[in-house]
Length: 345
Figure 1: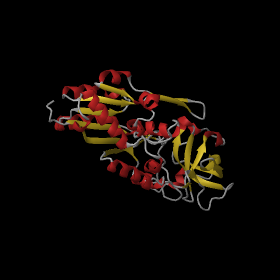
Figure 2 (figure 1 turned 90 degrees about the horizontal axis):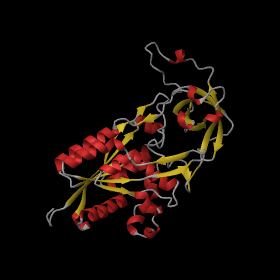
Figure 3 (figure 1 turned 30 degrees about the vertical axis):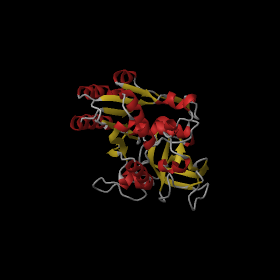
Figure 4 (figure 1 turned 135 degrees about the vertical axis):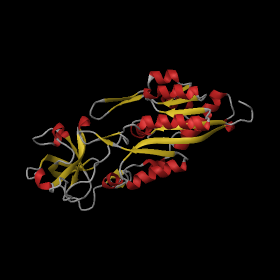
């Protein structure tokens, strides 16, 4: 590289992975703060400059892209997520990060999953590198499925840096959750960077480059995905809530593998969280999206919850369909809540 040349850097975010990592730092790590896009970019520039033997002033991020699943407008409205999703998009815009989204797919149990996002990221990364001739491509992921992409980028003459995190923590239910980086990916990239040891290194405790990886407390609302019904950081009960009332509702999300779900009440108010232990005469595996249920309203540690949940014996699927087979709108929920980590912790 000639002395006057700029080292052109492109950053590709695996959105679900990055959100999981950021949520770990705000909920499980002593820092209690989310990652900052600008701080991550400053770190990347410094790291690339060191690996390439250049001055940081000659290293520039010319493109940054973020790939994630997306709720439909109706789903976001149903879950009161329109504002919070827009806040997050504002954060990406301020950091000059282009957002690539694809609608989430349904699982049989009514929950969501991302499909083909990784393929899309790989195709865009390869095409953009072919056209723009990046010097260094930075992948923020831990997925070994990107190993073929690394080979292709190397073929185009681009070096590949990996920012990966490995960590584990114990959930309240006693299960241990682990996030790891593919060994094959680490071995294949040109510049592997495992971030957690750097962040936890006591020698770098007051390193501005490390500290700036995290949002200051005054900016934490930039990442607040669920601002509704919160005061001083705590969820409050919705207006007009009465405890101990039996209500009708519809299952709008099921995370059967984790033992919980959400119910949209027929009244149209906020969704109620329920746990498998609160089901009566049915297991969570026996429930399906759009099932009609009866439940009793209650207060939980984080807001409203449903207790004594059971199938509504008065519900007859045949009566709810018109002659063309379309579900009528009375008391029906439109869509379900997105499992936070699947995309959002």
